[in-house]
Every structure is written in structure tokens, then in C-alpha cells.
Image (cartoon, rainbow, N blue to C red):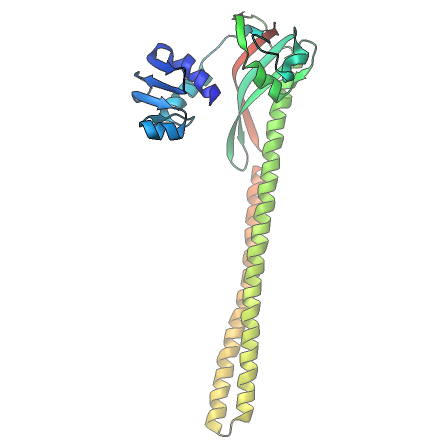
Length: 283
């Protein structure tokens, strides 16, 4: 919410009037419906404001405009302490400088996923973790400019490592999904088998009872009636046995289909699109 709030203030500028006592603003511009917007749903509902969230039409335009803007590599001097103690995650980087990149990774695997990736490295070659990268983006800027050279070799390595982590996380989730699907398939198969086997046992009992009834019958007509019942029940039993075999074939086919679908996706592809790159220095 805070990041969306700060981005919206920057992107909308003078087109909106922001309330600095609450996450609320009034917008009257060409990018979305005019009116009052609120990041807090209960308050928005109470006041009759638009509930402002990342998937709201105006927010989607704001985010996409920021992501697709062409930016030269920037140079930022960041205020590490300001009026507060330095964040613990960044304390060890006091006085350091380095590179930071933000980009999107589009992964096409079992499903299409989009991930925002932050990767950073100090000039000493120390890779920044995700929290440090995020913390850098929350610092105030003391001065800014542009740089003509960027992407040193060590930085490329760190960026590729960050992308590899995203791909590994996707693969891990897909593996978990596969396990869940296998469990569901096995449970369905077991329920189906048990149901058919129970029906077969019931038919076996009914056939046995009909056979005993035929033997105990006093008249020929009663014996013939019992025999007709046995024949019908034996036919039903044969149908159930075929159904059991067909169900086993169906289970095998569904398992093969699932494995085939996954095998087709094993060659997962991904694309990287850079949003911005920054040369940072902590002061």
C-alpha cells in the first residue's frame, strides 16, 4: 500500500490532491474515473470512495506507465540515516556504493507467471539480498543524475542469480502442485475401486442367496425364477468387473495425460524486461 501510495503521488502529480493525514486522494484527470480514492477498504466503503488497490483501473494504468517508461541508468545518492537510525539490513553498507536493477520476469511453465525482481550488488562484489534491495528503494534521495556506463560483469551475475531464484521458486511450486494432483488422482482412483469392489461383493452375496433359494425351492417354477435372478445378477457382476477394468484403464490414461502435460512444460521459458537500473551510493 505504501509503495502504491508513493508511486501514485509521483505519477499523478498535480492531477490529484492528496490527503496527507490519510491514504486518500481526489483525482480529476484523463487516466481514470474522477472522484475520491481510498487505499483502506472499510473507509472507502464508508465514505463512498473508490477502493484504490493494484488491480483498480487507475492503479493499473499508473503501474503500467511506470513499468514501461524508458529510463536512462540513474545515479542516486541515498540518505541512509536521515532523522532515524539506519535500517538494520543496510547498516553494514554505510558509505558503500553499487548497482541496483528492477525488472520483470515472465515465466511460461505450467501456467504463465509474472514476477518483479530486484537485484543489487556493492562495488565490493557483495550481493544484496531481497530485503536490502527493497530497503534501498525506501530511502530518501539526496541527489540524482544519470550514468553513461553500467552493468559490470559482477552485476550481471547477481541479476542472473535473482532470476534463477524466481525460476527455482516456480519449479518448487509446480512440483508441489504435481504432488497434490497425484494425491487427488490416487484418492479418486481408490474411491472408485473401493466403490466397485463393494458393489461386486454385494452382487456375490445376492448370487449366493439366489443359488440357495433355488436349491431350497419346492416347485419348479420357483427354481426357474431363482435361476433367472442368478443369471441377471451374474450379468450385472460381469458388467461391474468390466467397469472396474475400464476404470483402471481410465486412471492410467489420466495419469499419462497429466505426465504428458507436465513433460511438455518442462522446457519452461522465461523473458526478462528491465524497468530501471540505478547506480546507488549511501551517504
